[in-house]
View 1 (spheres, rainbow, N blue to C red):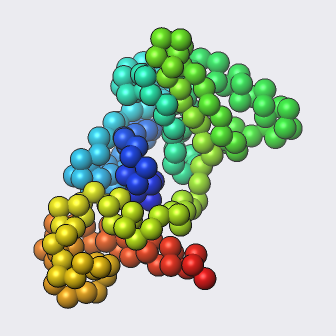
View 2 (cartoon, rainbow, N blue to C red):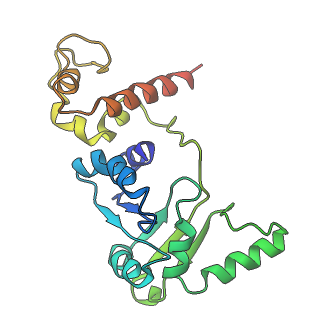
Length: 204
């Protein structure tokens, strides 16, 4: 999730978090706890259940999609295809036809496909269903792009002692000071450091 949000910020894409399968009540508290840090950063969180509350799910998501080209991304099993089947009546038929042609017979998405919404003639709204992923690479982002892609870093950028501060171990670093006093979550700063390391590996 964190890597996806960094990619959205770097590309100027508005991101929303969809917490699906809220009917699985025994896992819901843990799921809510997991998205809480991102909600605190200002990312909207929408709780839905494609199976238990389909009409309410459509009512929640449709306004977010109107007039937009949107993509559902996340790990396998999160219910992305189930959500799209609610929003696009013919999507399930298309998926089954393609699976039959490929002789796969699998319900999990293994290819990326774009679907037009019913009112696409009016607003050209579309949804892209993407395969689930285990890793989300961000090797193409430079150091400068990475630091700006962490929205909680922005108030502190330019406040470091050194103009070329990498916000890792430098003295009098405004970002590190914010991590120390809790204004920036430590797990997010650790992800930043990991992404910097991964980006450096691509240079060799």
